[in-house]
Length: 161
Image (tube, rainbow, N blue to C red; front, top):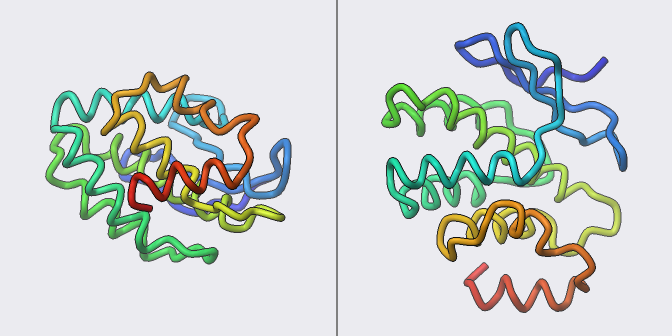
Protein backbone atom coordinates (compact mmCIF):
# COMPACT_ATOMS: atom_id res chain seq x y z
CA UNK A 1 0.00 0.00 0.00
CA UNK A 2 1.37 3.36 -1.01
CA UNK A 3 1.78 6.59 0.89
CA UNK A 4 -1.05 8.90 -0.16
CA UNK A 5 0.41 12.34 -0.73
CA UNK A 6 -2.47 14.50 -1.95
CA UNK A 7 -6.15 14.28 -2.89
CA UNK A 8 -7.92 16.50 -5.43
CA UNK A 9 -11.42 17.97 -5.45
CA UNK A 10 -12.64 15.30 -7.88
CA UNK A 11 -11.50 12.49 -5.53
CA UNK A 12 -8.37 11.62 -7.53
CA UNK A 13 -5.26 11.10 -5.44
CA UNK A 14 -1.53 10.66 -5.82
CA UNK A 15 0.77 8.44 -3.83
CA UNK A 16 4.34 7.21 -3.72
CA UNK A 17 4.91 3.48 -3.65
CA UNK A 18 7.43 0.88 -4.73
CA UNK A 19 8.07 0.84 -8.46
CA UNK A 20 10.51 -0.88 -10.79
CA UNK A 21 13.54 0.99 -9.48
CA UNK A 22 12.83 2.43 -6.04
CA UNK A 23 10.15 3.54 -3.55
CA UNK A 24 9.58 6.85 -5.36
CA UNK A 25 7.16 5.65 -8.02
CA UNK A 26 4.22 8.05 -8.46
CA UNK A 27 0.77 6.46 -8.72
CA UNK A 28 -2.49 8.13 -9.71
CA UNK A 29 -5.89 6.80 -8.71
CA UNK A 30 -8.99 8.37 -10.24
CA UNK A 31 -12.47 7.61 -8.87
CA UNK A 32 -13.76 4.37 -10.38
CA UNK A 33 -10.43 3.52 -12.04
CA UNK A 34 -7.50 1.34 -11.08
CA UNK A 35 -4.33 2.89 -9.72
CA UNK A 36 -1.54 3.29 -12.27
CA UNK A 37 1.88 4.89 -12.63
CA UNK A 38 1.58 7.70 -15.21
CA UNK A 39 4.28 7.56 -17.85
CA UNK A 40 6.20 10.63 -19.02
CA UNK A 41 4.78 10.45 -22.53
CA UNK A 42 1.21 10.43 -21.15
CA UNK A 43 1.44 13.66 -19.18
CA UNK A 44 3.69 15.22 -21.84
CA UNK A 45 0.88 14.57 -24.35
CA UNK A 46 -1.64 16.23 -22.03
CA UNK A 47 0.69 19.24 -21.58
CA UNK A 48 0.82 19.58 -25.37
CA UNK A 49 -3.00 19.66 -25.49
CA UNK A 50 -3.15 22.23 -22.70
CA UNK A 51 -0.51 24.24 -24.54
CA UNK A 52 -2.65 24.28 -27.69
CA UNK A 53 -5.57 25.60 -25.67
CA UNK A 54 -3.85 28.07 -23.31
CA UNK A 55 -0.48 28.71 -24.93
CA UNK A 56 2.71 26.70 -24.60
CA UNK A 57 4.55 29.56 -22.88
CA UNK A 58 1.89 29.92 -20.18
CA UNK A 59 1.94 26.19 -19.39
CA UNK A 60 5.74 26.11 -19.47
CA UNK A 61 6.13 29.21 -17.28
CA UNK A 62 3.69 27.79 -14.71
CA UNK A 63 5.69 24.56 -14.71
CA UNK A 64 8.92 26.52 -14.15
CA UNK A 65 7.41 28.13 -11.04
CA UNK A 66 6.91 24.64 -9.63
CA UNK A 67 10.34 23.47 -10.83
CA UNK A 68 12.10 26.33 -9.06
CA UNK A 69 10.49 25.42 -5.73
CA UNK A 70 11.21 21.70 -6.01
CA UNK A 71 13.82 20.20 -3.68
CA UNK A 72 14.62 16.69 -2.47
CA UNK A 73 11.96 17.06 0.21
CA UNK A 74 8.23 16.85 -0.43
CA UNK A 75 6.50 20.08 0.61
CA UNK A 76 2.80 19.31 1.09
CA UNK A 77 2.03 23.04 0.75
CA UNK A 78 3.14 22.85 -2.88
CA UNK A 79 -0.02 20.96 -3.80
CA UNK A 80 -2.27 23.82 -2.68
CA UNK A 81 0.05 26.22 -4.52
CA UNK A 82 -0.29 24.11 -7.65
CA UNK A 83 -4.08 24.02 -7.33
CA UNK A 84 -4.13 27.83 -6.87
CA UNK A 85 -1.83 28.28 -9.87
CA UNK A 86 -4.27 26.27 -11.98
CA UNK A 87 -7.51 28.10 -11.11
CA UNK A 88 -7.13 30.22 -14.25
CA UNK A 89 -7.66 27.11 -16.41
CA UNK A 90 -11.38 26.79 -15.68
CA UNK A 91 -12.74 23.34 -16.51
CA UNK A 92 -9.17 22.04 -17.01
CA UNK A 93 -7.87 23.24 -13.65
CA UNK A 94 -8.06 19.87 -11.87
CA UNK A 95 -6.53 17.99 -14.80
CA UNK A 96 -3.65 20.44 -15.10
CA UNK A 97 -3.14 20.48 -11.32
CA UNK A 98 -2.97 16.68 -11.32
CA UNK A 99 -0.41 16.64 -14.13
CA UNK A 100 1.70 19.37 -12.52
CA UNK A 101 1.53 17.48 -9.22
CA UNK A 102 2.62 14.23 -10.89
CA UNK A 103 5.57 16.06 -12.43
CA UNK A 104 6.36 17.74 -9.08
CA UNK A 105 6.45 14.35 -7.36
CA UNK A 106 8.49 12.94 -10.26
CA UNK A 107 11.04 15.72 -9.89
CA UNK A 108 11.38 14.93 -6.18
CA UNK A 109 11.93 11.29 -7.12
CA UNK A 110 14.63 12.34 -9.62
CA UNK A 111 16.31 14.47 -6.95
CA UNK A 112 16.36 11.47 -4.60
CA UNK A 113 17.43 8.87 -7.16
CA UNK A 114 20.62 7.13 -6.12
CA UNK A 115 23.66 8.43 -8.02
CA UNK A 116 21.54 11.07 -9.78
CA UNK A 117 23.54 13.98 -11.09
CA UNK A 118 20.96 15.78 -13.24
CA UNK A 119 18.03 15.33 -10.85
CA UNK A 120 14.93 17.33 -11.69
CA UNK A 121 16.55 18.83 -14.81
CA UNK A 122 15.59 15.63 -16.67
CA UNK A 123 11.88 16.42 -16.21
CA UNK A 124 12.41 20.05 -17.14
CA UNK A 125 14.17 19.01 -20.34
CA UNK A 126 11.19 16.87 -21.33
CA UNK A 127 8.65 19.60 -20.57
CA UNK A 128 10.79 22.13 -22.44
CA UNK A 129 11.08 19.82 -25.43
CA UNK A 130 7.32 19.24 -25.78
CA UNK A 131 6.17 22.80 -25.03
CA UNK A 132 8.96 24.98 -26.46
CA UNK A 133 10.70 22.81 -29.05
CA UNK A 134 7.55 20.95 -30.21
CA UNK A 135 8.98 17.46 -29.74
CA UNK A 136 6.50 14.61 -29.89
CA UNK A 137 5.71 13.44 -26.34
CA UNK A 138 7.10 9.92 -26.87
CA UNK A 139 10.34 11.32 -28.36
CA UNK A 140 10.84 13.71 -25.43
CA UNK A 141 9.99 10.97 -22.93
CA UNK A 142 12.72 8.72 -24.32
CA UNK A 143 15.25 11.40 -25.27
CA UNK A 144 17.66 10.85 -22.39
CA UNK A 145 17.82 7.05 -22.71
CA UNK A 146 21.30 5.85 -23.52
CA UNK A 147 22.82 9.32 -23.20
CA UNK A 148 25.59 10.09 -20.74
CA UNK A 149 24.84 12.59 -17.99
CA UNK A 150 27.53 14.98 -19.25
CA UNK A 151 25.89 15.16 -22.69
CA UNK A 152 22.49 15.80 -21.09
CA UNK A 153 23.99 18.43 -18.78
CA UNK A 154 25.29 20.32 -21.83
CA UNK A 155 21.87 20.07 -23.51
CA UNK A 156 20.18 21.44 -20.36
CA UNK A 157 22.76 24.22 -20.00
CA UNK A 158 22.23 25.29 -23.62
CA UNK A 159 18.53 25.74 -22.75
CA UNK A 160 19.29 27.76 -19.65
CA UNK A 161 18.76 25.24 -16.87
